[in-house]
Length: 227
Image (tube, rainbow, N blue to C red; front, side):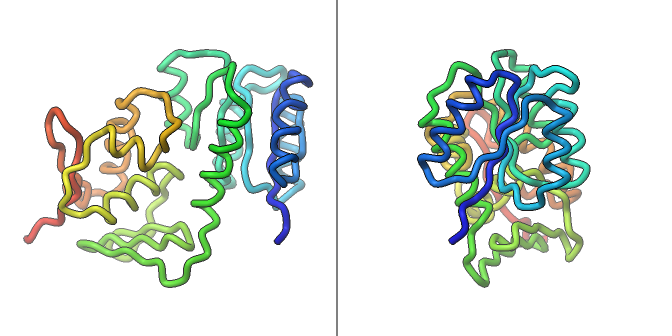
């Protein structure tokens, strides 16, 4: 099987080398970019990039701008790397379609584990991996979602969240359980991240968004109305 290709974008050469060495040791192909403009150039040239590790603070073009441009063309998974710890930055990242958000300093081993987790889920090859409920259909192998036959555009985490809801219909799910299963055990963020994603997911689902019920003080439950 061909090695999956990861692009590491950071203006600090030491950081790029550290991340690259751990990824290469884990059998990934790695390409590097030292600023946002170089990153976009390489992204447009190379159609085989499986995931992007993207620093926020860079010269010429910052990570947010790069993310905006890439999201116009692709849903390739993006992990943002930043020295900031501001919750507003994290929410902005998710709003732009960022899949994971890791603050520096971080453990390279944990970073590689997150890369692997995302790529495992986005490259599932199971056939007939279809979930359906109340006019909502999820094709896990194709990573596509539709409502009443109409495709809906979801970020990676929104797709994972909706899939988790459909797989657990009628079950009350705590925020902690959702974090553990959708964001993985090593996610150190705030449970409010879930509320942000649920709000956006409901909006994209239209009237079907009502299937995601809020359980006050606990979490959520996905339940199809009988009507």
